[in-house]
Image (cartoon, rainbow, N blue to C red; front, side):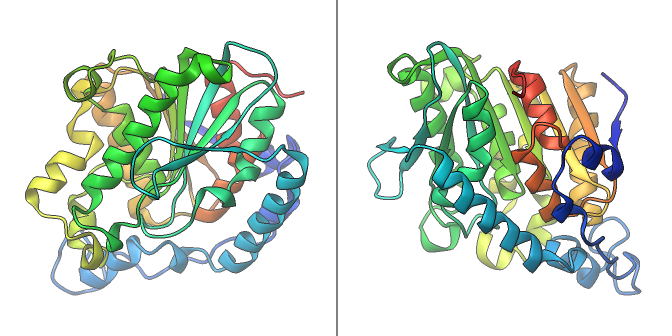
Length: 326
């Protein structure tokens, strides 16, 4: 598919999106071309740093995150407590498993955002709830905080890949269909979802290449070179080799499943460009990819829609997984 879908905020709200998410439109940050030496494209260092700082483009962030906490508290009451299961040996290598009713159900593995440094699985029951209610198992893995470990981002990428390998190998044990494993990730979790989608499963993990049958990457980063040039490298410590190894866009030969790229029109210019460029590169490589641009959603508002089957993210995931909202 070569046409980018455009979903308006009005359409999303009309389909049931929380009025809270529409309460305030984001302000624009500084113009990208601000006069200093160009570091990346037309951006100087300050503009590039701003383009990888989502808060600057989301003046309502505190309200949106408060709403996420409220949604999570509500979902935690509605859902049965998840099973906590180890997918690896490190203390952090555990996952929350939310089971749906029935057997041979699809499974969604969700990777949270937080600059690869923050947040934990128990904050995302609200993402799991609509999928569980409508016939899918949901897995939310924990993974290391990149600034607290040796080995850097490569460790996190391996951890999330192993969490998906665990889901594939144990699907029958928890009522899942191993041929229907999907991934969803937001922000830095969008990068991790992209890394999972471009895994060399047979070469690196001894598994079939079609471990994952589809993925939705929301506001992710798929070529890490501009990230390396930005303020984020103060804790990521990326170099040329790690940029090459950990950039999903550079491993499209291992993209075996269809992908949907979702971003908001009120996000930073780089978070918008990253999704568009990944999609363009994937299409050029003959891969099945779709782009959804959601009008007037900022980086944090777009995450809210993952919990709504009628919002831009939820609709993409439900459609890909073959779920119907009840």
